[in-house]
Length: 77
Image (cartoon, rainbow, N blue to C red; front, side, top):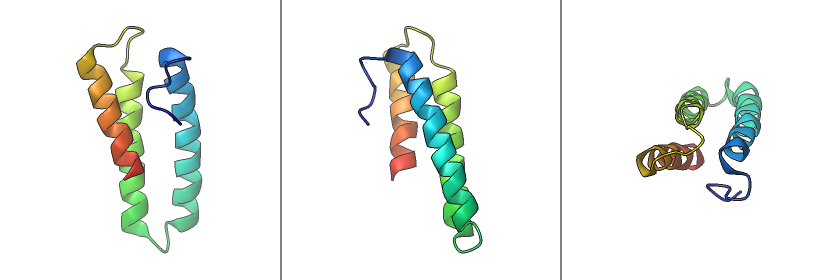
């Protein structure tokens, strides 16, 4: 998944976010009892990404893109 998805713009990012949230929720539910700290960190990272992506206007500034990119990187790492 390329970041940002240039062919589908901000709406594409928001669509991808829904899939990321769904996958993270499934993962956290499955692994919570064995890895409580790690699943909490994943949930927190996804929530930060959701906040930054939801705040993106249709023509985001470089700073807004940088924030969303940073938050996406924290979900991956």
